Length: 96
Image (cartoon, rainbow, N blue to C red; front, side):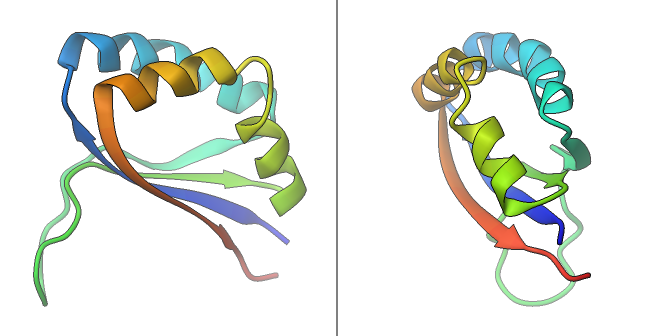
């Protein structure tokens, strides 16, 4: 069953985030992930706006997503992202 990493990102340090943004796709791919949505601003149709910069990654399973997120390759990038953004992030199981 696929699994999704869903992140709403507010950039607080543009230069630091650019470093993260340039380096993270290779690690996502290394762990079998793919971008479904990457940072495009949403078009608000209903309700109150709550996304600033939305990113959605898809992995083959929750286990694959956890391997990516906890990997030694992602650890330094995660530290960069945490230092240069305010992020709300969830893991969501998909449907078969």
